[in-house]
Image (cartoon, rainbow, N blue to C red; front, side, top):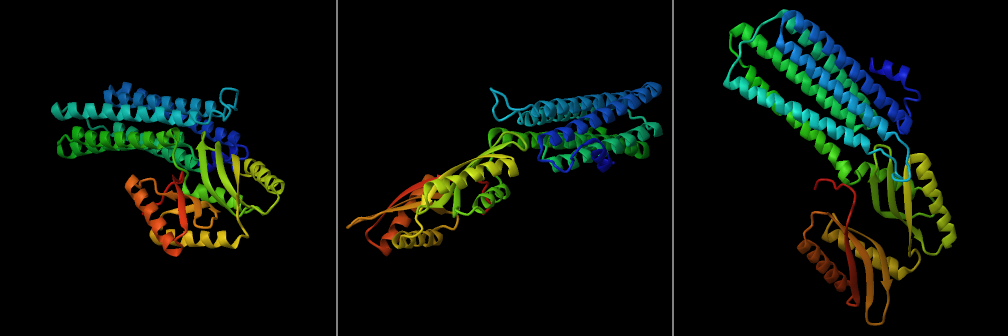
Amino acid sequence: MTNFLVRHFIKDYEEVEKVSVRTAYGIMASIVGILCNVLLFGVKLTVGMILHSISVMADGFNNLSDAGSSVISFIGVKMASKPADEDHPFGHGRMEYIAALIVSFLVLQVGFSFFKDAIVKIREPQNLKFSIISIGILLLSIGVKLWLGLFNRKLGEKINSQVMMAVFADSVGDVIATAATILSIAVFGMTGINIDGFVGLGVAVVVMWAGIGIAKDTLEPLLGEATSAEDYEKLKNFVEQYDGVVGTHDMIVHNYGPGRSMASIHAEVPNNVDIETSHEVIDRIEREAKNQLGIFLVVHMDPIEMSDEQVLKIRQQAEEVLKQLDLHASLHDLRVVDGKDQINIIFDMIVPRDYTREQKRELNLKMNQRMKEIDARYALVITIEHSYIAEEEK
């Protein structure tokens, strides 16, 4: 069903990097969510009124509130698709994250309501009514909500949409809650034991935990998270594939919404190549990064020594010493200022972000000592930095 809807209602559905295609996915998911939840609301309200069942009608109004989540998703996707303007030169893509954050608050509110109701039911157990029709309606609800959740997850993973993943988590919470209701009714019907309050308490914790997870995943890109190792390698390899670029470092990526990023990177170019030639290469990289990757890329050009044997020798020595001292550190932008009695070696060193001031000072000291053992004239001038790339677990 999901593939059918995608193929028939989304033009160019494979080109998910396009903002227009992402918007089409988001609108379709929102409309499907609204229709499913309104359908469940109508069925449950009707059956609840016929059976005079408060619980079934209450579950129906819960579905109506879920339709509200889909409306928020729809509004968020539409606002995120607005083009850049004078006040927002990088577009409105982060509105999608804000919509997902609002949905996470709704999930938390539902979980908190379940929690309060569960406490009341534990203190004051209520008589449950076993009804085959009620069970059938609840099973229908589980089927529809489970499909809706998987539908949103599949599309959310395809276009990297936080708001769709939030709707997925919301739907899973509803499935768990409804399944718990069926379990409580079934146990009561077979044994006469009322476990409704205790089951509801467990459901409330699960739902609230899901809401917290959604909020966390949504807040990270809003606050500014480190670039993933996968995206780092992709952009690094893209820049370094060009003739005239011998290396890269100091990459920073700013996320302005899914498919909307700005990045800066330092490209190392040979210092014996004409600067206009290197500049032409850099301009081409920036243009093609926009066209091929959809990234507004700013490239800083760093000339490095490629022929001076003394500099190459010292760079190799420094890299080997640092590798022996700390496998998690690296260096770049090494320059040498030669003198009769002293040779200044100037470079930047990147260390893990969790290193303390003492660890940095000790590494700096050991680096100086080891290099002086090679040549007493060596004097290191080190600038210690942190990477903006997500670090792998040690």
